[in-house]
Amino acid sequence: MKIGTPKEVFEGERRVAMTPDSALQLQKLGYECAIETGAGEAAGFSDEAYKAAGVEVLPTAAQLFKAVDIVAKVREPNETEAKRLTKGQTLISFFWPAQNKELMELCQSKGASVIAMDMVPRISRAQKMDALSSMANIAGYRAVIEAGNNFGRFFTGQVTAAGKVPPAKVLIVGAGVAGLAAIGTATSLGAITLAFDVRPEVAEQIESMGAEFVYLDFEEKAQDGAATGGYAAPSSPEFREAQLKKFRELAPEVDIVITTALIPGRDAPVLWTKDMVEMMKPGSVVVDLAAEKGGNCEITEKDQRVVSDNGVVVIGYTDFPSRMAAQASTLYSTNIRHMMTDLTPEKNGQTNHNMEDDVIRGATITHEGEITFPPPPPKVK
Ligand code: NAD
Image (tube, rainbow, N blue to C red; front, side, top):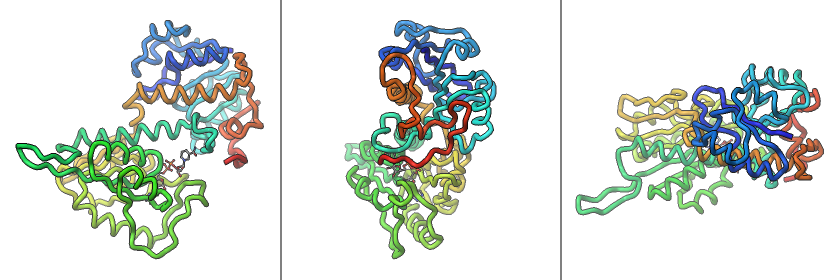
């Protein structure tokens, strides 16, 4: 069978789902590989590099879709791409089926099988295919780098002949995958790092990374992340008030705030309010990784860098992984390659779409003309 990757069509998307290295691995599984010309260019992978790795380079997306059995992409297909899918073909990409019902139905009507990378169950066995985590890890790292680029001071404290420099104080709100990556980056740059999450079980992880967990003076039973599959649930109004009170205390002293707080299926909670921005020192920076979901900061504007009246920079970019396209493509294409490994147990270049396999079943949203989303809950932890 042949697996192919078209050039991404979403404006500004620089990542690519197959790299020359991942193509070599896919060939070891018995597949032939193809790309659309220029597919890897924005991520730093030339057509020549693909050709040297034995990849066929096709001149148009239409030709690519026609030539392959499996289409591997980063973003969900647009309508034109979905209409190109044919019966028996498999598409592997991010898809967000709950938000893209019509698109899912279009793929189903074409008879294509769709594996949504955002639906890979978050169980230990599937970590190697967990593209949400590999991209969140990059977003967390890049958020700190972006903050540093907008912050006119050092992260680390220094004693120099020209004077003493205090370390920067960084607050990370939300310590999931992106938040923990941001903590790791900020501490390694020498900042004093504080972090908060509604799930108290992450306190240990935060502290093991050299950051300080921000405790609230609050009596109510804390959120039990285990009961919600590791994700957060909305907080009670009283908890939220206690959280905002604590943040108001911290606002005048922190230099950089990185917010990553998300609640599945909902708009992001507003946690860094306008008055908190007004309390921050001029030159401080807020990077809001929840901008796609409305933002954790009240003054965030999606995909924009805004400066408040008191000189605080608020960044609401939603394309952090794409801003590190080479790294993101390397990790994402590895996630895809691992998915292909599980789909090819015989390593004979033939997919075995085994719907008895928890991971494959969980990620499959259309198969053999049927919608298979949402999946049943996974059996394995
Ligand atoms: P996410 O992107 O859904 O949310 C980011 C963080 O924001 C979470 O830690 C959440 O608790 C926090 N949050 C929500 N509301 C908040 C509020 N009001 N104030 C402060 N923080 C708030 O999270 P994620 O990175 O996708 O991770 C979700 C869970 O999945 C975690 O428990 C993580 O450890 C787990 N996970 C497991 C695996 C695996 O086992 N394969 C892989 C990745 C993630």
